[in-house]
Amino acid sequence: MQTHKAIHRYAQIGPRKVRLVVDLIRGTDVNKAFEILRFCPKRAAYFVEKVLRSAVANAAQDPEVNVNRLVVRETFVDSGPLLQNRLRFRPGPMGRAHPIRKRTCHIHVVLGEDAGVRGKKAAAGAAKGQV
Picture 1 (cartoon, rainbow, N blue to C red):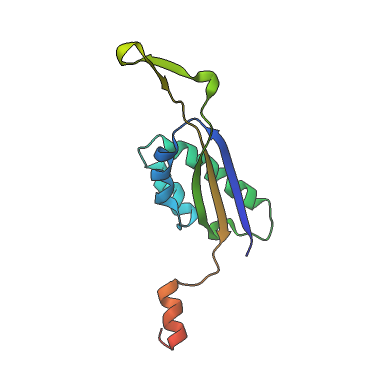
Picture 2: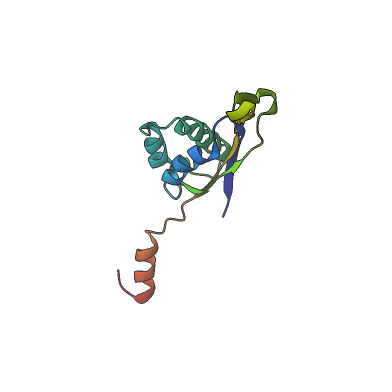
C-alpha cells in the first residue's frame, strides 16, 4: 500500500492546541476531513488544512492514485523547539523574571488510498459468510 505525506515544521502554535484538531480528522476520507476543518472554529484548523492540502497535492503527482479515494491514515503532532529569538520575560513575584514560552510544533499528515473494503464489520461478516 502506497502512502503520501506532508509535514509542516515549526508551526507557531502550541502542540496541545493542534492535537485537538488533528484527532477530529484521523481515519476519515479526505473530502470529509476538508469539510470538518472548514467548519472547525479553532485556529489550528488553518494549519492542519494547509498540511492536508499539501499531502493531497503530493498524492496527485502519482498518476495511479485516485484522489477521491484517499483516506487520512495517520496524523500526529510533535512539539518543536521554543523560539529563542522571541523569548520574552514577564515580571514574577519578589523581583524574579518568568519566561514567556513561544511554543512551536511539527504537524504530520499521512494519506493512503482506500482499499475498497466496505468497513471492518462488513469484512468480518463476509469472512463468516454473512453479508
